[in-house]
Image (cartoon, rainbow, N blue to C red):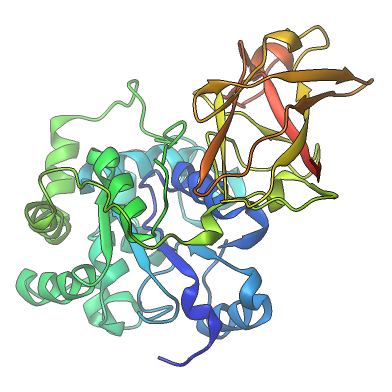
Length: 397
């Protein structure tokens, strides 16, 4: 590896349909939205684009993510690398629902209709569908170019299970790996691996498989038959993962990028506030960052040799929201706050926070949330919203 600073950049190699949207939100909270980059598409020459982003962003970038298979960007391009796996049949059922929800033009390009059955997926000879529904996990982590090249015979007929599984296992054994089926353990492993001094949480799990899914025993059997490599790979990895949840090592190094270090006479919007948990992704149009499903947003402050005077501006989902019932706590202790109102927001002036030798937690607790669909009729937004962070200002105490 070179000495380029991008080697400190964390890499979430996101296998599709593995709760990645929720985990990406968690990660954007940790490092600050402005310090992360999510690649939306992988096309020819992607490795050059990937390297270009790392070079251009330099020290300002903490995390990259995207549906980036091993063949698009090899190992060693960044710093710590991790992924989340999911039981293959559950992943494909989720994929079916996801494909059905795509715009008509996208479905037509893939040769799919309005209603998509398992039989439709398995009958497809479109490479982007075929490669997903037939051992898509193995193709994602393989180092053999022919397995992902539609021009090669091996793309359409993968070789025997043993060589493919061993190839992928060699990759996964060098990564930090978790599973959707045991996300609490995955988050604990990730917390320890990334040297984060606080507990991680994941919001709404964006699973696009629903109870109304109509799949038959024959559908499941057909999926099992053509995904034997993925099933063997997944269950082999499961056996190798720690059975017990890890404990955080005490006294270890901390990645300071995962803490918020406010400076006097400076105002920060959520994009530039790392050390968060329990918030949604930043919404550029409204310049807001909503509290998530838990109703409690946490901001983890870096050690400070001086007292901190913080003022927090919040926006509310309805005009007559119970602003006085919003609670602030420092390491669990109720914190005195003065409220100042204006037309669009409430400004909460916190009592000075004393100097502190270690990280501390500032939490914002909202009294209630309202379904977005109640506020905007017909909205596809499934969130419940109440309170949003606009900005945080630090003044000299």
